[in-house]
Amino acid sequence: PASRSLHGDQGPLPVKRAVKRRVFPQDDPEVCLAFLSCCNRTDLLLKTMTAAVLHMERDEPSVAYEIAWVDNGSHKQGTALVAAAVEVERVVLNAQNAGLAEGLNELLWGAGGCRARHALILEEDWMYMDVQVATQTSERLHSVRRALAVAKAGLKSFDRRPVRGVFLRPETYDSFLRPPFTGPWLRTAPTLEAPAGVEYRVYCGDVTGGSGYLWGSFTNGAGLYDRQALKEAVGVMYGVPGDGFHEAYTEANYAYRAALSGCHALLRMEPHCDKAKQCNAAFYHVGGGRGTRPNRRADVRDADESWIFYGTPNYEMVKAAVRAQKPEGAGTDTPRSPPQTLSGAGGDFQEEGGDERSRFMESIKARNKAAFRAEGAKRDEFRAQARAIRSVMASKTTPPSRIPELKAMAEKLETQAER
Image (tube, rainbow, N blue to C red; front, top):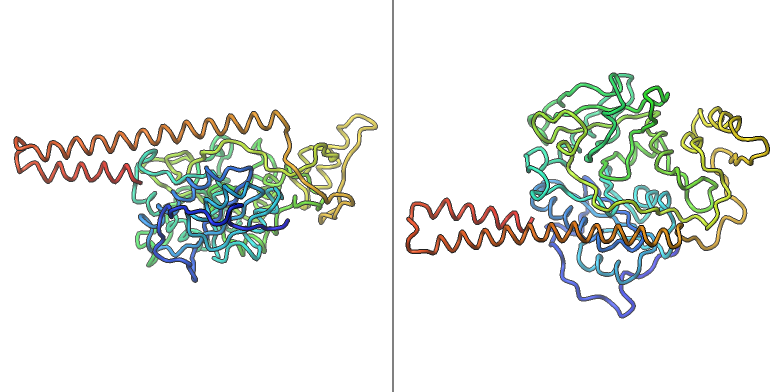
């Protein structure tokens, strides 16, 4: 899809930088903060991108990072505001919504995407868990550095699958995965970057389906990966416009393919937290659902779970089982592997859903607005408390011996309000 200008229709927008980066552009990054946005959710993107930059600048200044951003068809005014407010090394603005696969393939491996060996995928709706929502343990404050240390450690699972990524988000797989697919808590060997080592736990997908739920070692949100190793072992995502793959299964298919040859790790963020819950996360989801698939109004392809196995040795077997369960005369769609371009698949793409989709997006927008309003109120409360304490400090009746304590309290509240 064609790219377009960073500026609005009336030229560059006079927007103040949300936060100034110490080093920009970063020529030798260790990690790429990778953002994929769509559906005019640039207001949300600006908040999550700013929060990520603030975290890296304040809490992890030793980590050299770059930012790559791909947008799928959002309005020019919104993308211009983000581009003006945040310093970003590489930007690709697709004129139309090209879908999840096209966006992530470009972001992770395309000419306009990441350059660092490792990428932390944040889409547009994964927010760093700052003091407003989580205890700022040393482990959480240095979560990206620690994730890099684990990703570089050359770890192996119980069945010798390599650990290719680190999830920095809450998950639900403790509810269905059991040992040996969930490993014990271990610690990496000490390094210069992590002198005490990093406490981690390995999770591997049960690709046989024996655990009752198919789950894989890849997520589009708040996961850090070795880009090169991922592409060499798994390849790119299916579901780009015209490749014949059903876009509804893009992430699930890639996660399953990733699980066939690799696993991922979870880091401990808080003492005594043993599960993949929010207490062991560094980012949380703030955006709700969205539906980025660029299908035509009617998708002629069958929607069934066999797409999850597409491009793997198990696909033909699963597809045959699905076909056998269908009523006689029902159509089946059986693309060849690797994906072949479908004749007539080009042309204009559009989002699905019509009026129902619009109502859903409006409800998500209202929910996000309420969440950020509540967060703003909390910050205002911290500022008010700080002002009250400083008023007490200025009072002639306050003993001088209490001034240092009160000053520390006020400064802490002011810091929390601005994080």
